[in-house]
Image (tube, rainbow, N blue to C red; front, side):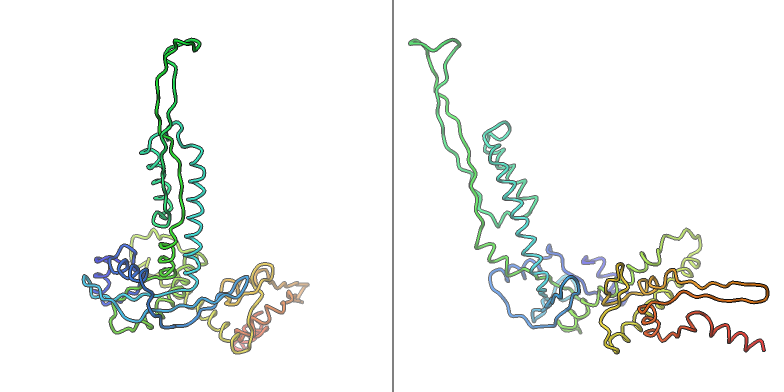
Length: 348
């Protein structure tokens, strides 16, 4: 998204963009480098609640002030996430531990076979640091010691007239430690992710709020591909593709309406969860697919004996009845009894 061609095309068609800024951009590098040297004040934006094994709170803040980008008519703001800060610190620590483990494994291989020369050892160390990208966080020292020893010239047992030659070889040893100053500076940018916007009318807080809405939009694309199993259409006419896509659009709208109705009623009636996940696990934000799955296998049976017909129905669970109440659907309507009575009245 963050390329001149993409941004120019979207803005040229009347669109607006809010997206993260790559670390390769000069503005992002300059901003983070400034934070490494000196912390800046943050303006609190709000909190997000994550439900899982425990209740977590992720505080998202933004840095006041917008930095303009000269190449395009865009603005950049710096944002900070407490959850991302933890993830960044954990990721860096894991990388450092892996590098230190690789260096430990390298120690017994020094001064043997392909690791007898300084250039070869430095090349192997550089490969390890490049793989995990933590070169600036480690101080590595490759020391060398000259060792001399005598070697007999010629074969045979040594005697009074045996001649020796003196050989000198370099023995390398590896020592490292963590760069505490660099690690301290890097903590200042943990949790930071710059945002770009092409709409100058939006404040920093409004940009962040719009960006945090993104997962809800992408949720529909996920449902479009997974729940509805959308696949490429091999039609010759674009009109047929548009017709099928319109049906998918309607199904997503109905799906969103069902979710909205259930969640609003849950909030209104003080219901926190519905046990509709496998093994009756709680769902804090029920989706339409899981709501419909809760009624999977429910059936009605009709037994005809001559001119007499008797209907048997499966019993609805408490959760199923609760879902019907949240949707405002009566049990008679669910079983189709109201529809059948309506048809009979029309015929009479």
